[in-house]
Picture 1 (tube, rainbow, N blue to C red):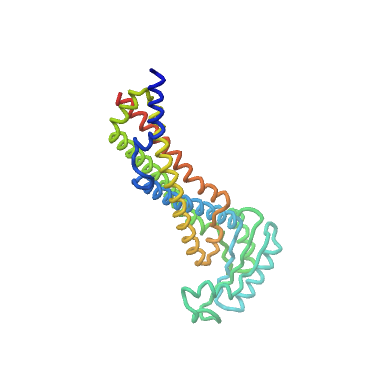
Picture 2 (cartoon, rainbow, N blue to C red):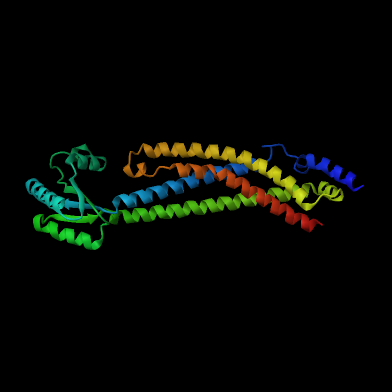
Length: 305
């Protein structure tokens, strides 16, 4: 008798997901909800990873960077002091390199704001700029010592650590990273809530069928596996679709940022490890949805008995 009951349950188990969750694949809202969540999570994660790469690369590049400005209106005197400062810097201990920024580059920098009429000649007297790289970090004491040396040969010299003006930018980037991480957590919570609601709804609409399975000897764990497999299939379909949409959005945004032709944007690209992490987002989504469905169904079945 026991064997006959278990054979009957086995028959129900084989078609269990179709009976307990009768919706066809992609017919219900679950795959679409998961696809939307995965797409948004992929875009948010890509943004957080790109911002992290940008902040780290910028900090590493500018940690030993120093800018020397020769603020002098008279062109001849400005050039004389610039050459004297350049000679001193190249012979100073702890200076890895020093190069005078060409005037053409300075004109190209101010042209978008002041127009072509303001560039070239001496319409607007621009300071001479010297790009300096130190062997170690640009500490305050090192900057002060370098300033004192330069003022002896170039009274119009001004020395600034490149990392000082970048500090507010790095702070803003970190804030955007935290915002992206908070968005990812909210999307994960929303996905969990959607799976919980779908599992509860399926249990309520199939209560009579579940009672029959219980009478045939089915356990809570066996019934939970039926729901678990169904939710896992929906999550896999939605995850693949969401990842595809998210990647399309990432490539579209990457092209827009590439059009800016900015040096900072160039160092904010995604690495191979970053792409692998993005590929794991649907996997994490499937695991989260499956575990949520199992725990939800198991807890509900205990209360039904």
